[in-house]
Image 1 (tube, rainbow, N blue to C red):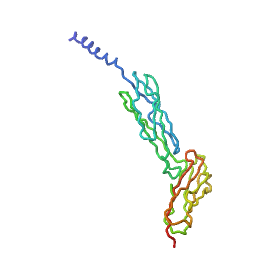
Image 2: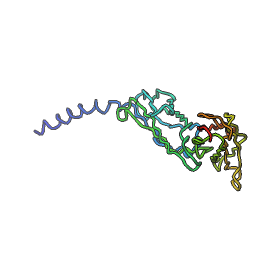
Image 3: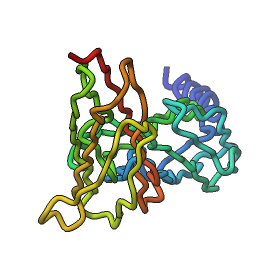
Image 4: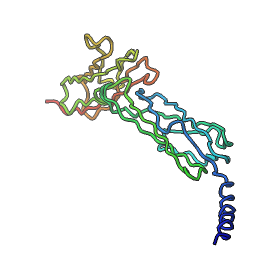
Length: 241
């Protein structure tokens, strides 16, 4: 038995040597897989970069980059990395329309987008990158439309809505107009609001003809994100007494 022990040790060591000589393969390592975009305004573009490196001893291949939705795009740079080489995933998120239903600037919408990275890393064939944040409107409408209701001809009907600018944004309302000749409209700044709140006052004229009426109120602004706001207007005028 004492003679067999050294022989067995040699056999075991000989079997382990090929394993230790094997490459461990590509190994992707990100500096972070989650980023906070903070608060952005509806319509702004979010650009973020996720940095990574190949910590393995074989070439790393980025085989696929799949965003969670069409408003997100991602580009690996480069898509093949030698051992020790660094790269990055460049991500672009379009936020237009995400906070379209917000009725005040304080009414924000949570943002969560993901990008799935597929690689030849044997231990991490897929990695999910996550972007969090909030989206708020630069300019908010208390209502996206005005409905005058159904009223007999000869009645003048007045409706109002509120337009509010986010406190941190330097935006002015420049003009307002109606595409319906039977509707007049004007802007009035809310006293004490320091140019952040306006009333839109729309009036359906008493001499409006019978029938269903449609149109838009168009508000011009100094905003690069929302240079024009449209409020749909409709009403029904019935036969007068």
